[in-house]
Length: 537
Ligand code: HEM
Image (cartoon, rainbow, N blue to C red; front, side, top):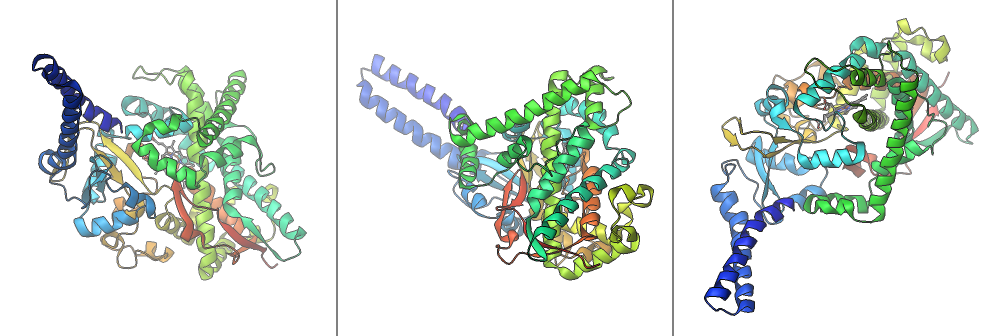
């Protein structure tokens, strides 16, 4: 809409001047001259931006284009289908770089081409920043943290945070990951004990969200909130609001693209999101005050790195200012919690659907960590013996789950300067969509069984596979800093849960895969509910 206003404005000004000149000096009747001039202006506007510019003048006119009317573009088609589904169709027909339209002729490129992806994400990643609308959307929820920063500021923040995400720093978190996994499983054991049946139906995604929130707050910020115990704590309620999908949220997401002003409307949805954001930021500022009071100079968690980065100006002369620490905390709570929870929940769902894989994985866990099956509690585990990276089938299942249902199925970028992608000139400001979900299912990269959930594919990838075919965390300087964190966290929780419980689909609910929805992360509309029973022995 901003584009609409911006493009229309010069034309309306010119038309107004023409009306003034015609009626003042040529003595035309103002009313009818005005009506006629504005009508002609509007028709010229439509003709120019919806036909002449996109098909005859735009520098992107040579890019294969999805047929359709640029007036409303392809936005309804996209929003009515599962994320990535229409892009799959388009790329099959028109090739690995295609142009399509958002309303009012706004051009978008969808890119699945291997070298173009490498260029955008790795080789020239700072020439392709997050889009303005994406930054606005994310900063509305999580403030101005590393997720929305660009260029030098981003590089600086990333450098300051890297120590908290080194392999050794993540390994040191293993006891905490086990602690929360064991704690969640003891709540489940209690639920099963109290049930009249030998199994209970659990909302796995809600439990996973609470466990991963407790974990990030504990290991990232040295605090305790215990949402595993208190399922209605304000912080978890705030996240439920932020990640909620319902008809209104979906409608607002579409309207937001057309009219960004909807975010300021005094409606219930906006008020609830604002209240959720306030809860998040009050929590973050409480953490900072606590940290400032007892700063631990040797700490290596996320908050220590943020506070230390704030106090010590970096070599390039730029500081991570105190006022952004709050935003950084909110960002990490936002991106470090629901993503891992979603990965964990979809993996358990897929294992419940593919029982033989669940059995095979459990046997692998048993052979590496037999003590887990003998009912070892957290206190009795020797963490030097437990390295979840040593389990090849676990690794395959986890990667395949990320490929099959990536928690973040889509990212976007905007060219920060004139660029080239292969044979195409890409003018500054071009918006590029990277449909991760589509890329993960392309037979051109994955072979003919790309649509099957098959962990064994990772033992023998086809020659056509490349690093850019698997982008759950994207890659390059803007790729996920928490990749290793999430990997160790999810594998640990899986080992703990699979050593104690058997998972199967709940026949009382619809298959969660049929209800996939996307809002920041890709979840199932009503959560993932599974039947959970205690393992024999
Ligand atoms: C399954 C779990 C996760 C997935 C699938 C995931 C995925 C991603 C993706 C795709 C991006 C890039 C977004 C973009 O380019 O627009 C990203 C960025 C990021 N992720 Fe993750 N993430 C996960 C877990 C985590 C965790 C556990 C943390 C922190 C503890 C984390 C912290 C971040 C941060 C800070 C960024 C921004 C990086 C930057 O811009 O430099 N993520 N993540």
